[in-house]
Amino acid sequence: DTMLQRKFAGVTLQPFGSFVSVFHTAGSDVDVSLEVSPNSNWYDPREMGPGAVNAAVGGGRGGRNRRQQTPRGYKSRKVQLLSKVASELRYQKFADVNLIAHARVPLIKFRDPRTGVKCDVCVGNDGVYKSAVLGAMADLDSRYRDLVFLIKMWAKNWNVNDAINGTFNSYSLCLLALFTLQRHGICPPMATI
Image: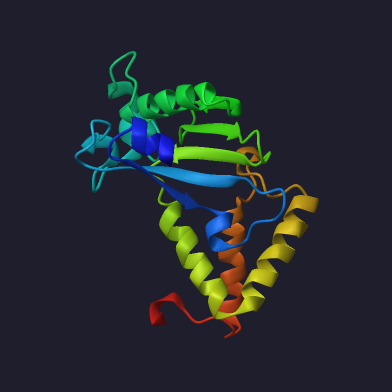
């Protein structure tokens, strides 16, 4: 966060994922989203503004059609920002810094050399809000958190918790657990909160 404030004006850090929703385990990574202010030099309304479509840079639904309209050699502002941040992380001696620029959601993966904690960094991820909602639901009833841990252990054991390989991601497992508890009257429906 200190490095961002010093080197990247208008860019802030927002954690999300299992550390925010408190569904993390000892081996979990830390997920962070770089939030770009509209008055920052890194801001591009086509990618980051209200109603921006991820497909504008070749990701998300309809990305295939949009990708053909993108000029050859186009490098999105998100990828440019991540590239600069990755360079700065390398300079600051973070370990295993890897920019994955051509993913559906471009990101940086690295490891903190002091703690060994792995970290994923992306730009403008809506997981910030999703994680906060899941965390709030878990605070309402501790059985939700317990059920999520059980399901995640089961999924890991059976290798069905890896979205890259076509199975469930952790967020969808959390939603399935929440829906089950809502159906049994344990957790309230979202509309009542």
